[in-house]
Image 1 (cartoon, rainbow, N blue to C red):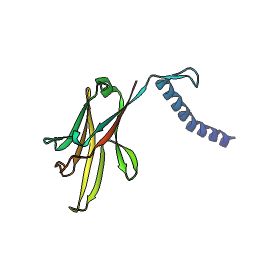
Image 2 (image 1 turned 135 degrees about the vertical axis):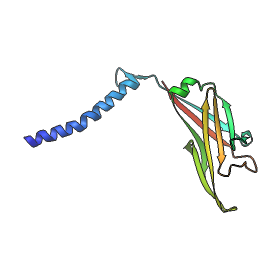
Image 3 (image 1 turned 180 degrees about the horizontal axis):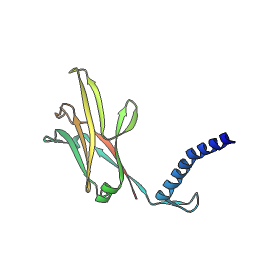
Image 4 (image 1 turned 60 degrees about the horizontal axis):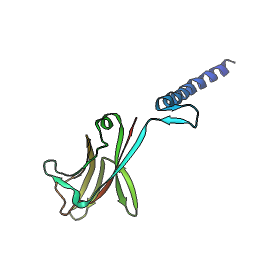
Length: 157
């Protein structure tokens, strides 16, 4: 009898926090009357940006390429109170993937026999998003840098 009671208490101690954990989160995010009638106030927003090869600007002071977009949806509330993430689309062979920013890519330059790294990142400010491309040798490309497509997503209540 004592062993059955001990097993029941042990199971209860593991199950109750899990059950209350799930219940506690649901009410904060969604106002649910019935299981299929949840109304969430959060919104997912996504914008796409294309930076062509000749769009990049070399910022000599920062030793990187930059391109800034006017982005009126990027308000101070979005910056302070949203969850945001930027991605870059990268082609690998015949497939295209999205990579989270900052994205660091290292490859071997057989001509100069050196490892070469590129970092793609972004900055957000009021009404503007800036994408940046920086190389490990901190010098500009001989030709224009490659074009990239970016995706910026944010969730706000």
